[in-house]
Amino acid sequence: MLQSIKWRLILLYTLLIVVAMQFVSFFLIRSIEAFYLERARTEMRTRGAHVVKVLDIEMRRGPYSQDLAETLLSHLRARQEDAIILLVSPAGQVAATSLNPTAERLRGSFLQSPDYPAIVEFFATDEPQEARWEDINGRRFYTLALPLSGMLIQGTAREEIALVYVREPLDETYIVLQEVQDRLFNATLLAIGVTLLLGTLAAQTITRPLQEVTNKATRLAAGNFDMEVTVKSGDEIGKLAQVFNYLAAELRKTMTELKNDKTKLEAILTQMTNGVIALDMRGHIIHANTRARDMLGITPQTSAADILEALNLGEIARLLQGSGPKVAETALTSPYAISVRAYAAPFHSADGQVSGGIIVLQDITEEARLEQMRREFVADVSHELKTPLTTIKGYAETLLSGALETKDVAAGFLSTISEEADRMDRLIKDLLTLSALDVQQATLTLRPTLLDELILDVADKLAFSAQKRNLRFRTDFPEEVPMVLANADKLEQVLVNIMSNAIKYTHEGSDITVSLKPTGEMVRVGIKDQGPGIPEEDQARIFERFYRVDKARARELGGTGLGLAIAKQIVEAHGGRVGLESAPNEGTEIYFFLPRRMPGKEQVS
Image (cartoon, rainbow, N blue to C red):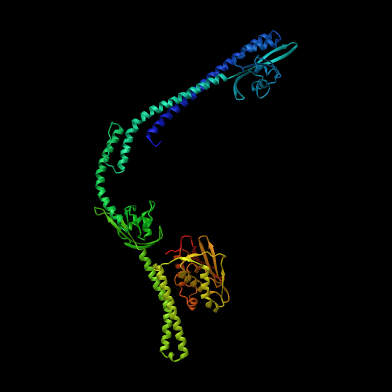
């Protein structure tokens, strides 16, 4: 509400009235209070002096009767109920009082206490105590202590008098002040109400024309250029309306010209599959299409220097001069991994001057990935095929050169050639399996599968290989083994690959433990050997294709370096994940998770 000028003006008027009334009330009440207090003080002084004068005259004649003194005090005291006049002895004891209940309760009391400071100070200084303001139990009083010498008699008793004590309440004064204050408060409320009414009317004469200009300016900003403001006066607001109308007409003409050009340019840039970024002479981004913003994660805080640095295009000055790199390729990691080829060049204005630079971005992620895969594949396959081919060629040449005549030697050579050919056959089959998984040519049919039965079946098939190295398979299964949703043939291939690795690398005469453990919606399968373990620096790459920790021993044992890579891809195709736990000389556990069979999911392709 306070964002409106109208309400701000009304609030200002109201605050002025409130502040003015507060100042008036403050000074008026203080003046009235001072007036009434001074009048009460004067009356009290007059009354006290009169009491002292009358009693002094009476007591000069000799001892004065206590009853006559109290009657006189009653006639001379103020008419308020709690107003009192006391005659006090030199010992501070009340000898006589005015005849009203408040005073009579004090007869015979000793008043030299903090509750009666005027009496205490009188006896301390032996000087009259002028009328003073005191607050007693929340009530305000004026008190007066004046010296008086004389003697009172009551029967045969005589008592000396030292002073007259007068105390009068100020209740009436403060009642008047409270009434004045209440009236001032009511007057303030009335003034605020009148101010709100008049302020609203006055503010509307200013805010209505401004509201009209504001509303039409908002509609103008929204694209409605047929706006005109009615000019109602010749003051500043009227001139503002005239300027607005002129501005709207000029803007209408300019926007019509720009709209056509903008529509064409936006259509071209939006439909482009490449990213486009335009920079001005100061290096500020003046345009970036949707594709460019997506590729580079451009935000309002992104600068041109950040973009050029990320794309390896050098400095903005070199780009604008045309001397910087024209084409650059780079791999970006943020906001996501992508490979980009960037083309950069300056662009010119209509007068031929360089007015900025333009960068065109081409997504070459797939191209770079395929090229990298091709290189790695050619290098790995060439390396893996070279060894068996070299062996086969060497033994074949030896046989052709005469070793064929020696039957024992020839048989050994031919056996080696056969083993190397089998190794090449396994390598090619593994490569075909990986290729099928890579391009998703192998469609997995998932069915409920009993893991314990499948594991025992694979263990039986590998029992001969295990017995040759005096190894034992041990199982760690729960009492109830949950079924998993899997392709039994592919899962068997995973188990064969991992358990075969365990047989190859486990120390002779030790155990291989296969465990099952349900974990939430997954089942964990672990195959733990008692081999030499895998160094920590090699663990992150153990599932890569053709990666071997001990290359010489792996080739000696007939490994292709693809078994764990195949196992990883098959498990991930099932919606699971693979991992390992290993430490040097403590063995290795290869584990993987498979989804449990859930109700209603009998088959998934």
